Amino acid sequence: MRARSALFDVYGSYLRARGGSAAIAALVRLLEPLGFEAPAIRTAVSRMVRQDWLRPVRLTDGPGYALTKRAERRLDEAAARIYRTHPSTWDGRWHVLVLEELPTRGARDRIDSSLRLIGYGPLGPTTWVAPRPSPELTDILSAEHIAGRLFYGEHDGDDGDLAARAWDLETLGADYADFVTEWLPVVSAVDGSQPAEAFAASQRLLHAWRKFLFRDPGLPEKVLPRNWAGTAAAEFFDEHTARLAPAAESFLSECLSRGGRARSSA
Image 1 (cartoon, helix red, strand yellow):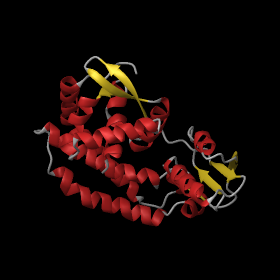
Image 2 (cartoon, rainbow, N blue to C red; image 1 turned 90 degrees about the horizontal axis):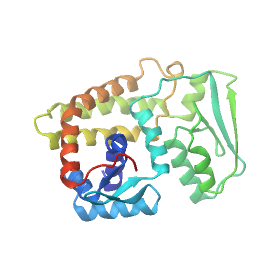
Image 3 (cartoon, helix red, strand yellow; image 1 turned 30 degrees about the vertical axis):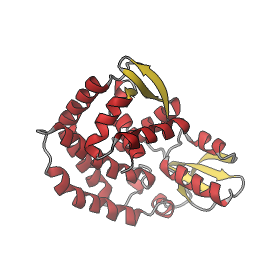
Image 4 (spheres, rainbow, N blue to C red; image 1 turned 45 degrees about the vertical axis):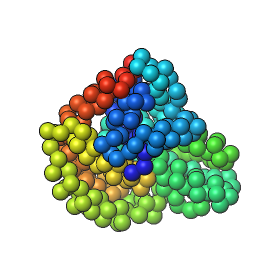
């Protein structure tokens, strides 16, 4: 886990619901159980400011950083997929993106990473599909100065086959099963008696789980393989996140009160 990723997780999982900002001293205290030292955190924060994910704010207890509108959109969309806060709806149509030209190699790599993160899978070098549109898509294309055509379409064939072509579901399913096997003994060994330890375990579990966002767009059940391992993995993640939440929230409150408070409005 890198400091930048840890900061995204903390803002998305905790601070977003508490106003979206915190004093730098509080951020240092929060990430200490994860093994990060103050210089690494300050460097990561500075980079996130330059990348328009955070913005400096003045808080009651000192300088702090708040989420930008861009970051709020990204974190809200990610949270909906991580915690499945929005009901899964699908009317049988795919959201299709057709790029008007093949991007340069460097842009192609960036586009590939960004589109996968927001739930699109490739059908070819210039064609992408998703089970639902992403509000970030236009910004991603604009940032790379790439034009594309967008439309909805029904697949004239088996939707499960289309999904298997756009996403490597066989490997993804095996990795979901491995996720449970790997993390079960780790998180089961942590209870709520040590808030800092519970916070760290919860964040490490989240970090490992969040990696699936790059690979799993949240496909509707009807296009997934039978006995989809992702369902059991999601239930495992939810169970242990909820179990550790009270102690983790206690640690968060302590850090915010000692090192700065989150603002009610950013």
